[in-house]
Length: 236
Image 1 (tube, rainbow, N blue to C red):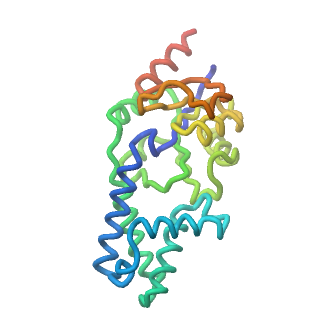
Image 2 (cartoon, rainbow, N blue to C red):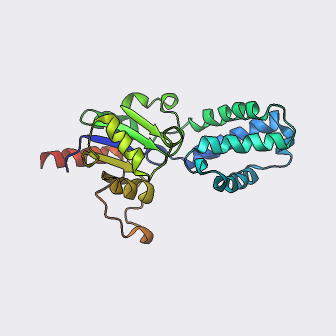
């Protein structure tokens, strides 16, 4: 395995995402209760989530642009409840959501792990979410960062993997993709011609039955372990 670049997923690979989304949705809802009380009189966080899930199938863009999906839903409900300038109101609401969305708690190994990997490899990110690495403070570690909502397609589409490789000037087979999702990250990267590493951070080290057909290149529980394995492979 000759690796020149390492690409990483973000959510549940560099930080746990569930508490972040809960906090962001609660922050948004609190803002709405203050600024658009007519909406909160009818909708809860759960009902808005259900409405958002129903909206996904109405536009192919929503399958990869989660920012547009949330913004469209907010615009709709603000308009339905008589808010003036609903799109501008949705812009303001999304600023609240995005700010909270970027208040992540990094896994303990991330900062030092990225520093270690960055000494030997080009680094990049490919994500289906819309976290802002500049606001989070991780952007300096990466030479390229691709987000599905800006690029125009999402993992496991090979185009987003290949675009990241092209930006780094490396071939797919010289690139390792690291992520927690066995279908989107591991299998998606492999089908695009990259090597892959399954990042399991939740004490699960065996493949679930539905993913038994996936042949793992590597599996790691943190970035320090990844750096050590890659260093060992380089010396073989």
